[in-house]
Image (cartoon, rainbow, N blue to C red; front, side, top):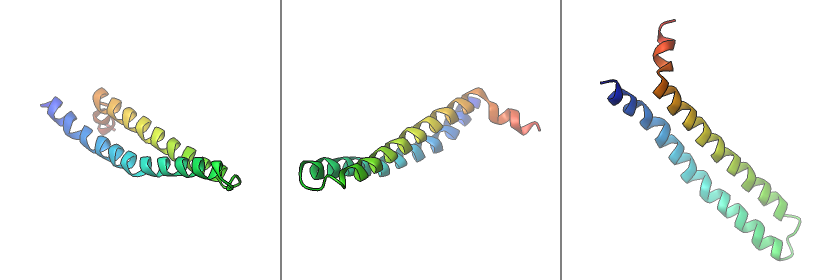
Length: 86
């Protein structure tokens, strides 16, 4: 019974992480591509701006995946049930 409950609790963090990656991922790729295309042409001053946005988006993706992994460990460890005692 507990294993089934844990599976249900794991669905939400996984779905949210996948949605965030699917939303931010293309934006990061687009910004990196724009920086590359503009860096090859005359827009050299704009390329670092796009790379900064691409880096920030990548950091968001890494942070969301790290938070998801931490949440899944909490669910497996039963820390949620321990907090209900207080």
